[in-house]
Length: 213
Image 1 (cartoon, rainbow, N blue to C red):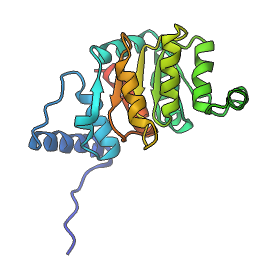
Image 2 (image 1 turned 120 degrees about the vertical axis):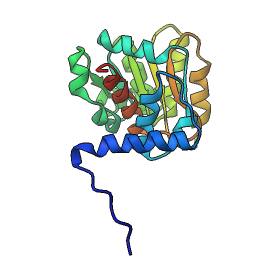
Image 3 (image 1 turned 180 degrees about the vertical axis):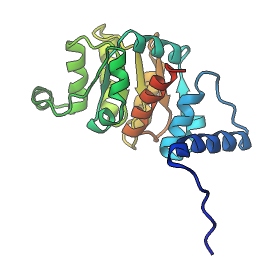
């Protein structure tokens, strides 16, 4: 016999999911840093992975600085079309902002071929050339994080926030640690191998939803 399914109205599914997440965190004895709870819980909701309660690292004041940047219309730059698709562009537009992804741009492809680097790396150069000192939501390419560090150190870019959550095995862990080592750059980092474009997008959305509270 199959266990009887809990009857939940469609409109209540997300609410019920967050109630379950909150209860399981309590059972695990996990105490989240005040102000970060909505972000951590939304990452768990997106992935069904409670490791984010331990893996997500927030620099001092990162959430507050990110919310202020969004209120001021800071642009969002992502390293994948999937990340761009997942971000709530309607809510971004309410604050005069928009999301950019340059991965399919012909000039970025040409720049990458000429320099012998990844398109993600070249995308960060394009963002710097356009003066997009906003929120960088990186969920796939550690090379984007490495290039961000180089641009910041060269004084060519000053992000309002870096969301460093690439997923994978090659240079992923090291690139995330490079972001954590930056001085005076707010960041939210998923330490270790886990992450993804869906996590990058959900962190952006969590911040946007927090602005309504």
